Each structure stands twice: as C-alpha cells, then as structure tokens.
Image 1: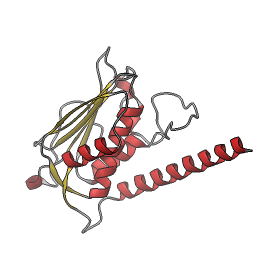
Image 2: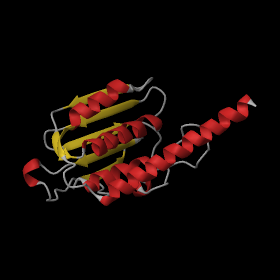
Image 3: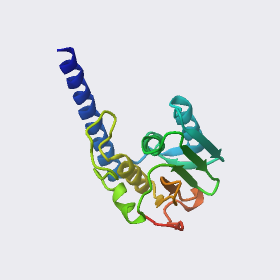
Length: 196
C-alpha cells in the first residue's frame, strides 16, 4: 500500500509540474504585460540559481560579467533556471557546465553530454520534443524546458542560438542575446544556428 501511495504522489507531482510548465509556456507566448518589466541583472540571477541549487558531481565554470536587461524578472528567472536544469539533466558523470554573461547582452549556458547531431538541434526547442526516447522515470521532464526558454526569449525581443558541441565533448550550447537597452525592439543577429 505504501508503494502505491508513493507512486500516486509521484504521478500527481509530475502532473502538477507539467501543468505549471504548460501555463508558463502559454504565458511566455503571450508576450510581456505592460508595466511588468524593469531592469533585471541576469548575472545576479545566474549566480543566485547556481548558489541555490548547486550541481553535484559537475564542474561549473562561471564567467559572469555585468548584464542588466529590461524584462520581466519572474520570466527571466525561469529562463535561467530552465537553461541550468537542462544543462545538469543532460550531462554526463563528472561533466562540466559553463555559464557566462557578457556586457554585450549575451547569456550562454553550455554543457558536456551526449553527442547531438546538429540536424536534431532545432527540434529540441519544440514543445514535447526530447533528444532521447521517453523512459518514464522520475525527474525525466516533459520536453518543455527549452521551448519555454525560446518563448521567454522571443517575448523579450532576444534571439536564441543553440548549437551542438563538437565531439568528443558532446552536449549543447545555448546563447540568448538580448537587445541592448538603447536598442530595445531592434534585432541583432548572432552567428551560428539561429532558432528563434
């Protein structure tokens, strides 16, 4: 009976997480509400997320230059959280995560992990798409993390570039480039595979 209760609790928690993720995706796709934006220090958000939930068994390399953007603090916090969670979840034992911000307006998160075919990268940013087949294990995720990141980036007028890392390191690098404060609303390209 205890095992069944634990299983039901796990299913309920997974369902709750899925609903919350779908709501966040929908809210992000609607764009930013007037009056909900202000200056947000992305370097501080990244540092706080790493301090609150440090990745165990992984090397973390941080290069956090000052980076303040105009946006919704809650959504940008979720963007950072999802990028870091993805980098941890899809890493290898003893692997590495690199988190960087630049004064030029870029947040980049990279990890080591399985080798990804560059042709598969665009679909990783689609809702419910995963690199590996679903195994129905605890903490597996629903395949919404990077699609939420892409939606939040679009809502903030940012461009998102995702690239498969070269062998043998494997893994993925995701760069989110925000328009400079004085150029909000204009698009600035980033070299690489632009996804959104």
